[in-house]
Image 1 (tube, one colour):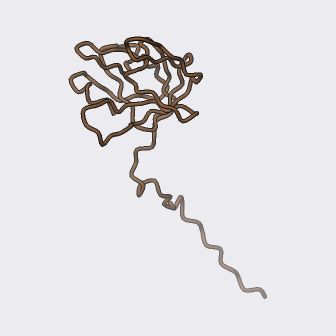
Image 2 (cartoon, one colour; image 1 turned 180 degrees about the horizontal axis):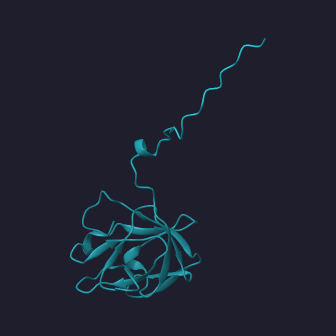
Length: 143
């Protein structure tokens, strides 16, 4: 939900419709998302969360260059979760490319479009419900 290096930072889950901002959190070297209202709290995203950025997405390697992805929409996910002690949070773009969240340039705004369904599959299965008892129509004998 939030990258391993943000465990010492206050966090909360994302909400549909809110605007989040990329930032570096105090006491860490990790970038992530925060609410416009409180930049000290990390906003955590579930894999599958869809985002719409205000502008084309910019990312860097913190030393030499900054690059731009010609896309304003992306889906949050995890990469290489089996490898410990590294950043896993990433944004995947429609062209299949991804960027680690910690590489996103600070100050970019994104709107949370949609959160993933988190119910277990068994609860998502359609279960018919009886809305109301229907009266039975009886045939009357003719004649």
